[in-house]
Image (cartoon, rainbow, N blue to C red; front, side, top):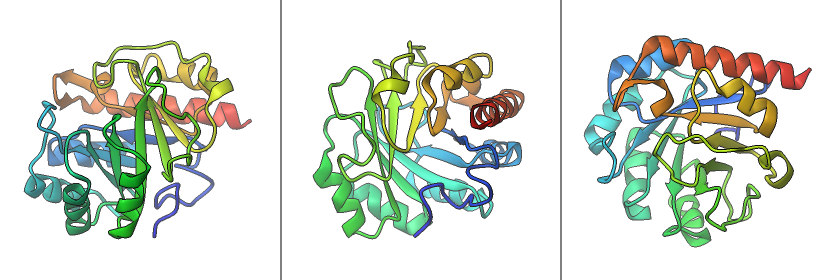
Length: 224
């Protein structure tokens, strides 16, 4: 099993203490760009409701393009737990991220039973779900905006006081806002998708590079 900081074991996550996930990748070039920029993890979406939806075959191709040391996280909000677990095991993914109220503790524990290395839980800030990482058996908690997947920014000021454990801040982040968000919320990591896109579903290499650099800088500042 990989560590809860993925395969990045040197001096915390990425050397700065801030775990960085670039989500919603759809091409091999985007995977390479995120990896080269220093991201700790890439997110591959398996959801019919997403414009970034991948087939299992394409997800496998993209996972194979991620170098050793970069976590591969399968993200879903509509697939059966057993189905997404089967894909994860087939392509060697590090984790499965279950998003939304349809999934609960039983689903996360089921991922473990099936042999998925890590189970992640994603929830909206306003959902009423527990905001303590590990409460439902997850390795990592992802806290999104009240409108997940919209790219809408939200006030994360209260997050530092109410969220516990290993958690990723998501929702409305961009290269211009991530440093301030880290300073306010003090998350364990950050997760971005639309904030580094040049058009819907298409990542911009320069935006990915800037995002990772800003997150690393803010993470190092928070540590010091």
